[in-house]
Structure formats: structure tokens, C-alpha cells
Image (cartoon, rainbow, N blue to C red; front, side, top):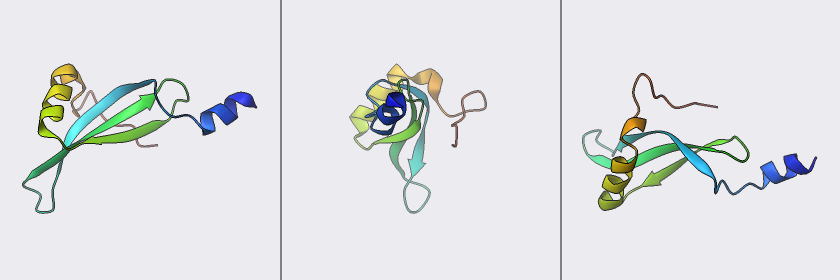
Length: 78
């Protein structure tokens, strides 16, 4: 019972990157921001985060090159 309550109010502080990809702007040609799917190690939920700053995007990509959205690395859509 307590675990279920803790999962309900989890802040997802302890998470791992599942995959990431660039998302498009309104005209489908300009790259707008980075969309990242994460999984919380505490409660097991999947959630998304977004990075809009280009410098932060480049730093994130350098750290997680192997997690780019591809055939072996696809998002889990729960």
C-alpha cells in the first residue's frame, strides 16, 4: 500500500534515458527541440522531457549517442 502511494507521488528523480530524437517545428523542416523518453527507476513509469537550448541539446547528445531513436532503440508507448 505504501509503495503504491509512493509511486503515485514519485518525482522521477532517479531516471534513465530510453531514447531521444529531434522533433520538428510547425513546417516540418526546422528542428525545434530534443524530445527525450525516460524511465523512472523508482516507480517504473515512462515520461518525456524536452530540451530547447541548442547548447544543452549538444551536451545531451554527446552523453547519450547510443540512445538515439532507431530500430534497436525505440520508445515505449505506454
